View 1 (cartoon, protein in one colour):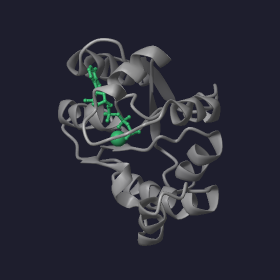
View 2 (cartoon, protein in one colour):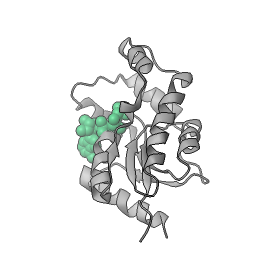
View 3 (cartoon, protein in one colour):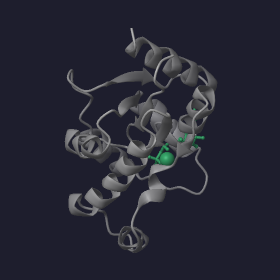
Length: 169
Ligand SMILES: Nc1ncnc2c1ncn2[C@@H]1O[C@H](COP(=O)(O)OP(=O)(O)OP(=O)(O)O)[C@@H](O)[C@H]1O
Ligand SMILES: [Mg+2]
């Protein structure tokens, strides 16, 4: 039997990490953890005050996500984390060397449309611009797959399961 993957679901805001993460976890029969829940209190205070996080704020958060992922090594798990920069993924891998990344990719226009429909969230266009400007896609030496987010959540989940399965071939 294959060792279950520990998957970090990455991608820009609104790409569907929180939507697809739990569906993927259910399909794989493993637990899901929401990356946003790993912020230390200092980050929550900063975000509540409307101050953007800087990289120094992100390191303890990424370490906490990485520690969760490492705790699932050999057992399997899915956790969301936008992980837009290579340096963020390197940090996660520092804690969880076996983590694989699922990059949810999509057209800017599609993501914008989906964001517009999201309740209780406000994402100005400039923020989405900065997300795409920051994004550094997976490089060849990084374990992971990219999956397009067109279609229904169920279709995307099946695409992700198939892509992750091909990683083992
Ligand atoms: N395949 C889909 N079809 C239609 N709507 C979708 C799909 N995937 C996600 N959505 C909707 O798009 C919006 C953004 O998705 P979601 O919140 O999962 O993104 P996210 O990557 O977690 O964003 P953030 O980085 O801000 O946490 C939500 O309103 C969600 O319901
Ligand atoms: Mg989310």
